[in-house]
Length: 427
Image (cartoon, rainbow, N blue to C red; front, top):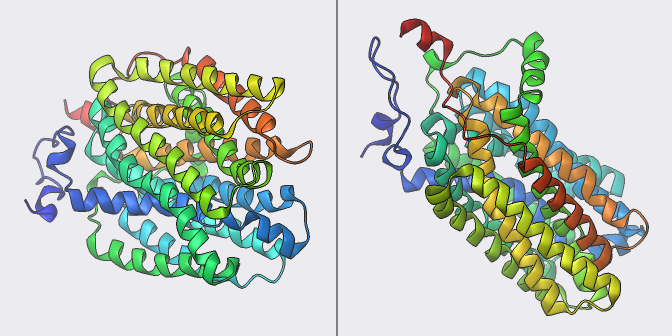
């Protein structure tokens, strides 16, 4: 079946095409490509994690200062989605993502050449800003073509591709560090950026035809974002996902120090543990797809964070009372990441199903801002009072999962698919 025929706009006067049956209109090739585009963000975050101790030693700084390079990248990811989302509604999906990936390659080289930690931190912010184009655009493409439970299943399938990156990234980073310095890690990112930008330019179809683009004027963006922030059907599920996502970031930000320094495992062993936990994350996303089809989005959203809060809370209590064995910690973290995998596809689908396609970029951008802004600002708190320990890491994660569970109570039933005002006038 030809993609250019499937994704082309309907003839003038023809009824609007249905937006169900996602996989009948987007092939495996496009889905894998969207996964790779989205995964560029997590790859930017995860590939250099094994180099944390090396960076701290080379620049002669404390652990918290190295963690700020990750925070800068995450904040760049958040701000970039806020800006690029509306751009994708104005000019279409393909151009922003191709330009963003090319910018990702350039900014990665700038980080590799950074002579000071300050310049490296600035470069990491730029990396996050430009690579966010892929993340916000991929979500908008999915919303262009599906909604409701179909959209939740589509997000789960996308997560199957995206989730593999955190699993292999620390391994790849560790292997790169075996033959070169941390700077070589960012050279690898630059090369990947060039290749992915070229492949995207060749293969990614445009899913938002010109006649369906109704861009929000720049002067009205603040008002439009404000409306979403006070819309319970948007903000409640968005915060469920954001708080669970922040728990993921606490783990990402602190696990290198906890596992390598507190437990004394090697960088390669750390990569293996990271992979095991990531498998749980991917498995959770696929279970989410199955559960949503049987119990609905709402039940998944309300149940998943409760499981995470109980599991990680138990780890925190054991850590306070005595020694937390490494196998117990790894199993508990795997369960918690599985919970994140359960919650994310359902929450993303719940949020975006209530938005018309020509506002999918704007809404997708705000969802991304909330997720990465919350994660980027909260995750450093694990080391606010000194070195990251199993107690501080699991304790903060437990609080975040509990907050996510509390917010899930405010989520209402699955929203009706949003309709374009122009469609209502024609009806």
